[in-house]
Amino acid sequence: MNTATLPAFWVVIPAAGIGSRMRADRPKQYLQLAGRSILEHTLDCFLDHPQLKGLVLCLAADDPYWPKLAAATDPRIQRVDGGSERADSVLNGLLLLRELGAQEGDWVLVHDAARPNLARSDLDLLLAELADDSVGGLLAVPARDTLKRAGADGRV
Image (cartoon, rainbow, N blue to C red; front, side, top):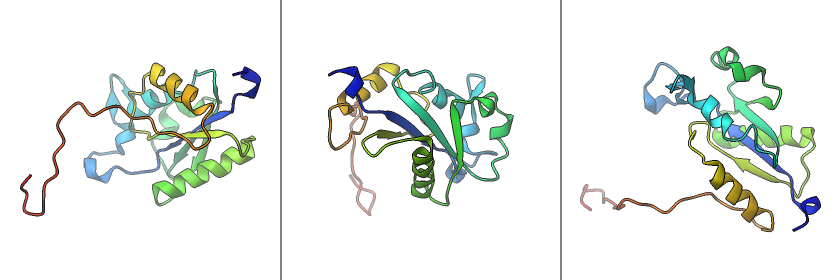
């Protein structure tokens, strides 16, 4: 495919959740992993990728943790207020992408803030597959463990 005809790729990262199930003193995206927040590791998966046109981070309007991170001043990250539900946050991100110049035929990758282990090779593969796809895609890996379903009685 001619690179002039490649679609534009954008990223929306919903990060407005409070992670109440974690029962931590802060939302899970701000927990520390190897000296940095999980959110910073997640952002690193995308920020330097040459095929990505822009990145929108959806945060709670009153998020007290984001301004303390070095990434908060990174001009490659556009911030938008998240919503009460993940879908509301994604919608707010999409609306901002339109303002930033996203077009109808562009692709938008939605990636959870608390998923910092995206390999560059997997991202490259996803972008290559999406470039000629008319519907979209989902990045997934085969399950390596046995999965079982339990009934209401707790039996497999």
